[in-house]
Image 1 (cartoon, rainbow over the protein chains, first blue to last red):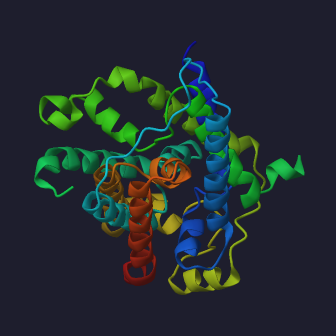
Image 2: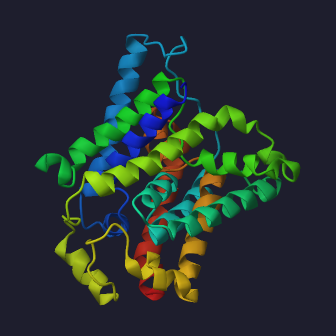
Length: 137
Length: 185
């Protein structure tokens, strides 16, 4: 039962991403061609609302369900891994039009060939894990 | 009901995505979809071969449940909460994509030319799916996050590493869409 809430959050997330068309390959293409404001609107209002939520929760000292303050883990400092990893991710994102959330959501909408993409992404993750020590970070 | 069945505008969708992030933070977790890929590798026993995957995946089970929910959510949205309105794409985008050889741009969520059965069975189509998946899987772990972890969570908590990663996402995306995709189709 303690996992039910996560199932519901996931369902809500899936519905929002389909209804907003953020899972649409075409919307990603359009975004990277600067031909529509749609995706920029989604991303920027998500960031602004998130920012607002974090500011308010800090000011009001809001506690999470487990009793500690609401907190976002800090990413390690660095440059190379973020820029190079980011570029590689972006190349894939624009090619298949799906990032790691939409991949699963699209399977739910009946795009079963996406399972091949997920398997390839697992292999990509595995390759990173294997090469981690040899890569500049 | 019309409002729900039609595509949702960006100014509704963006705040709803932030709501997902806020709820997960309230549950004491973070909004990070790509970490599920590493968790699945750990589950499959990759930790025996590479130290990177030696994490206790049971602690990440909640996130796999989010994934399962997302699959259900996709099913529900597609089958019960949608009409046949396609994406209202820019006319220029539609023309361009038709010139590239895509039939009916925007009528479906993803192009049949990449995700359809015939495409999947061709070397060309299969190569796109596999290469795209490899790039996303490798890139996201190297960068330490994806759109949810860096662009939404990282930027709304004003983290510099996330800004660098998101700039990377856009450099890669712009290169692919503008300079590589035209040669792929």
